[in-house]
Length: 423
Image (tube, rainbow, N blue to C red; front, top):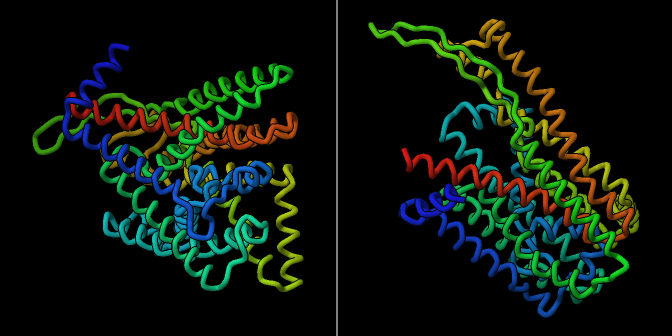
C-alpha cells in the first residue's frame, strides 16, 4: 500500500506524467460523450434488447464500448481500424515490400505502414456501416432508409470510427498505454453500472447458486489471466569479456525473458473484429434484393448464429492470432543477431542461426500454452451461456479478459514511467 501511495504522489508531483494521465482521462471522456449521441436515423432508438439476443451484435457492442446499443455516432468503434491493421500485418508475412516497410525501414517506414492502415480503414468502415444500418432497418429498429439517408448516416458513422481511430493514436502518442485497447477498456467499464443494475432488479433467489458459480468463475478467470500473463520462461544469456579501444568490458550472466502470453490481449480483440465482419457482410448482402444472394446471406447468418459454430470459430481465430501476433512482435533472428553483435550467447548453443532456432523452438512451445489458454478462456463464457441460458455471460467473460489484460499492461506502462522519473 505504501508503494502505491508513493507512486501516486510521484504521478501527481511530476508534471509530465500527470499531464499524460490527464490526457488519457480527457480523451476517454470525449469518447464516452460521443458514444451517447445517436445518429440522425436512430433518434430515440436503443438496441439493448436486440443485442441480448444476437451474439455477433453483443461482440460488436463490446468492441464499441456500448456505442452500438445507443446507435451512436461511434457505433462502429475502432473495429474497421483493427481489421485494417490485421490485413496490413498479414501482408507483411506475404509481401517482402510490406515486411521491409514495417520492420526494416525505420520510423519513416512505420509511419507509411500506419498511413496505409488508416486509408484501408475507410472502405472497411463504409462496408460495416452500410451493413449494420441495412440490418437494423430490416429488423424494424430503424425506419426504411432512402439512398440519401444511407449516404448521410453511413458518412456519420464512418467519420465517428475515424475520429475514434485518431483519439486512439493520440492516446498512444501523448498518453500512457495502447490507445485502441484503452478505448475498448473504457467502453466495457462504462457498461458495468448498467449490467449491475440489471442483476439487482432481476435478482432471483432461486438463482443464487448460479450467481455464486459465476462469481467463482470470474475470480478464477482473473487469477488465471494474471498468472499466465505474468508467467515467463527465462533463457540464460552470457556476455563474453570484450576489449575495445583499450577498454575492457567484464562479462556477465543475465537472462532473456520469454513470456508465455507474448501477444497479450490483442488476439482477443483481433478475433472479435474478424468474427463480426462476416455477419456485417451477410446483412449487407441480404438487403440487396437478389434472391440468390439472400440465400447465401441467410446461410451465413444461420451458421454464425449457431453457438457451437461461433465458439469453434472464436477459439480457432484466437489461437491463430496468438501465434500470428507473436510472430510479428518477436523475431528470433533479430534477437540472435543482436546477441551475437554484443558478444552474448546462450550457454550450450552456438551463436547465430542455432540460437535463432533454439529461441524459435522455445517460443513455439510457450505460445502453444498461451494460445490454448486464451482460446479456452474466450469460449468458456459461450459454454456457460449454453449451460445456464444466461445471455450476458457470453459477453461478460470476454469483457473480463480484456479488462484484466489491459489493466496489467497499463500498470506496467505506469511503473515504467515512474521508474524513469525515480532514476
